[in-house]
Image (cartoon, rainbow, N blue to C red; front, side, top):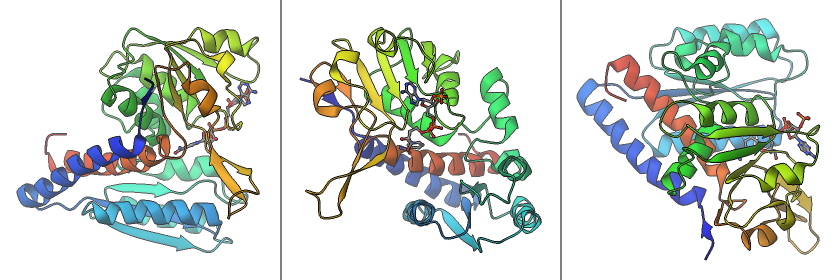
Length: 297
Ligand code: NDP
């Protein structure tokens, strides 16, 4: 029978461990991990994500500050807010919700975040440390969630051929870097495919583990996957569906019902990578607070 890799269940397991760590940090070091989320504008999806992150932080005993700024906030004003959070000792993690309005240089803002508080893992120093394996770093949350799902479901990527479809800076590239690391959760042989890959199906069929992050609804079909493959679907897409009350449904980049018939294990959408992303943000915040407190991580 195909194993269903539930991001919800694995996420609950990690959140329960984190709750214990938060309690221990408070009891033994007098430190409450603090997360600040910064939202510029009122884009509904971003508002929803930020709200979910703050709610999850509260449930864990993590102090969270949600800073909401007007859509016409200037780049300088935003940089000033980030600077204030950098020097706030109660804040261990800073997340600036992306995308930012067009008039703000995203790269400049991400670079302004103190790398020691870069719990989203997008600062060039975090990216560099992940790539070189030097020093401590915060791994970007979605790829870190993918690795946790593989390891905790008993599908360790070590020695396996992992094919990643997608080469974005937030999913595909960091996933490749994490999976090829000479470290637990890594040691895979990694192939990265993208829109210019010739014969995508031949590449995906060669995978022991297939990680899909394309943003193309249900594009990976049964014939593109070999028997016994482990499939992690990062894709989160809304597609019109008149049969649903809301008029749409959420699906992944993998045609679940078809691919499930061939896969040894597969993650669903929703209930797969989605919950893991928030959990890894909380894990990074607790890690940041622990490092600052001199506690073991
Ligand atoms: P991007 O659009 O930034 O990247 C998509 C990647 O897929 C690109 O590298 C692109 O190739 C590749 N691609 C697109 N079409 C094809 C194709 N036909 N064949 C092969 N490769 C293709 O997306 P993201 O990485 O930001 O996100 C990917 C998906 O993951 C989205 O559905 C997103 O919503 C979801 N996501 C989910 C998260 C979660 O928490 N669950 C978090 C982040 C993302 P090229 O580079 O050549 O253009």
